[in-house]
Image (cartoon, rainbow, N blue to C red; front, side):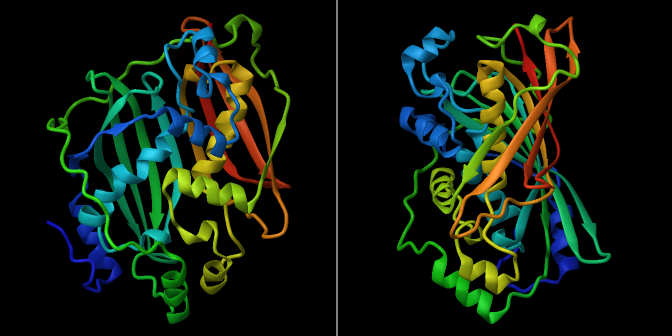
Length: 350
């Protein structure tokens, strides 16, 4: 069952429909092929200069047969994979009013150039809150496979939406003036014939250590050197283009003022990407990420006439001598304001 997006529904009706489609599962019709230049463009967008994302020779020195994508490269294909979910299944919400609150990335092997990625999408859970405001909380899951039937990544994305929020004429006009206008969108057709099994257990494979630093060099509680990233409006626009996310709250002062927001904000996945860039430099080989979890608590506001400074620090939270894996706790701040409420990465060390 789908709901006609043109029909005005009450928050309770939207919630009832969304609850009814929990467990809905589909496989995206078209595969996503990881390209050499796309890997580099995304690395640039998250300010990563790591050699395995830029140089075949550098990647081979680290034990890889081609360029390896940044740990948050999944954001490039995520919007395409989720589009059907919010256009045909979970309907009644304006996409620009949906906020990402948590992101969990579970790595089974690195994404690399030449991978043809097939994505199974499902709505995992839903909760409707009525007090003090109507807020809908939902979790979607993507299980991503390559052309060889091998698992590559499992993602869990937590979202918060405000159903029934009235859009003022001023905001509606502002959106019309800044949103992308297209005469037509090409139809790629159906290139994936398999249908994922909704009852299949999540994959459990984890990547190797590759050229990550030695487990024996680490101690619990160890703190790492901090790093600052500068983010400008140019960074925001570049990331929006690379990730294919046209939400105007990331570039339009006109829209954010009409909406009553404090200012233009960075993408959540952009700041998560900067964190992964920082951690990738610390551990030596970003391909050794096993898991990366972030709870988004405060946006990064980027002024029109200056840079926004985002400061990262990290320390070893725990170490497992048997598996030689470690958990690193990550802190991100803009001034005194914490951007992440909780952020950890599990790494497979040598």
